[in-house]
Length: 216
Image 1 (cartoon, helix red, strand yellow):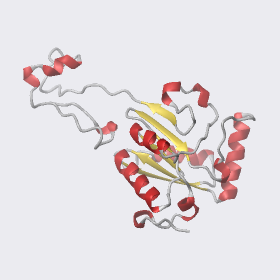
Image 2 (image 1 turned 60 degrees about the horizontal axis):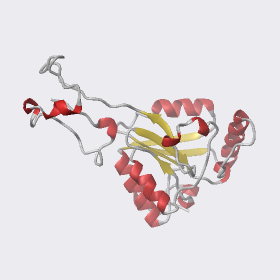
Image 3 (image 1 turned 45 degrees about the horizontal axis):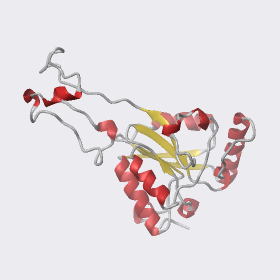
Image 4 (image 1 turned 60 degrees about the vertical axis):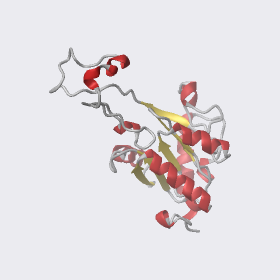
């Protein structure tokens, strides 16, 4: 069975998967679509290393392919993640596709409406997408080893998604135009008349947060 989506046609068994996705503005998160090796589980009963090896073997038996859609601004920004993954799990054909998070979520919505989905895992930063998908009962629960170590505010209590990274973003100023003493320190400093029409703040719903910046 192939994907009904002409943009991402030719996806084999992934076309019949439901999906799981996760993320937050400023918080990267992910969750798995479950079938076979990715069976839903609320707890790991065996040793974590043994569990991962069992999951790995099941994935090989299932065909050895992993499709990941990641949010981001550079097509190769997940290359290191992919290289580390295939080094740890030889034989798995891991394909990472990077697009802006709002683009990824739009494609997910499109494929769901058409009755199929390509990725096994979605890793994006727009939290509102996951609340929406969860409300539609479209997310599938999965709790990976080590999940309890993630702060509760960065994971779903029903295990439909989990945080994988937290990034802090601050102000950036042009040091050729402003001295260190002139640079704003607090939010209220940006209200100074000298900065009128000189602040750049991209719409966080239109761009990945990793591209957001304030410069002048």
